Structure formats: structure tokens, C-alpha cells
Length: 173
Image (cartoon, rainbow, N blue to C red):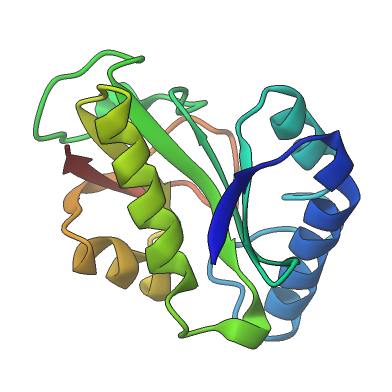
């Protein structure tokens, strides 16, 4: 497995990957409450690639995971019960982390999160933060198993009626 920073040459493949994941979730348990054909989808993937914050986990030329990594929570992270009072730009945030449903339980999520942790350390950030839907047990277990500390369940003012609160996690690096 390797992590690549996506370019527009990867756009179709990454969008198709997220479409595959959201279609699978729609037929099973949609833990993150993602919307097939909408989010994450072609538009959000294109925007992330243009901002140079979209990554993919690749194995033998196939995308088996994807995520966004940047320093912008895109919402009100100030409400979190964080271990350390940090300003934007002092921590990295993981968004839209997904592993291929055909390869669940093969360590892809762990591999991608460890990459994010190493990137934060190498670039001098003080923490990695993430939010997830409170009912997303698999994501919560992943972060907790990697040492992330629960920072509260909060309204991040995203205006999503179906997700009024998010579970916050932080790892100091």
C-alpha cells in the first residue's frame, strides 16, 4: 500500500471510488450518513484535488482508500473539549476517510490514519483532529485504537439536520 496526493489525472478514479463506497453504505449500514451521488462525490473530490488536499491509498494500481487532509475543519471546532487549546493552522484535520468495502478489515484505515499522523509530525503540527457521526462505531474504534482522545459530542454548526452533533477526537503529535 502507498499513499498518493491526487491530481486531476486521478479525479475520475477517486470519484468512482467514493461512489462505490457510498453505494455500498446505502445498501448496508451508512455509518457516516454520506449521500450517494452527492457527498463525497465528483464535486467535492474535484474541489479537494484542486486544493491539493485529496489523497488516495493505492495497492497494485487500484484505489483502496481515500481521504482529505488539511488544516481547516470547515466548521466550528472551537466548541471541542480539546486536550490543548490550538488555533487553526496548528493541527491537521482528517476528512472523508474511506476504505474499499471489498477490503474492510485489512488495515487500510489504520494505514491511512498513520500516514496522517506522520505527516502532521513531519510538518510541525501539534495535533491531528477528526470528527465523525456519533453512531459511526467502526470509525470511533479506529481512532480510539490509534490513541485519539474523545473531545466531546458537539454541534459543529454544519446545518445538517440528519447529523446535529459530531463526535470529536484528537491525537497530540
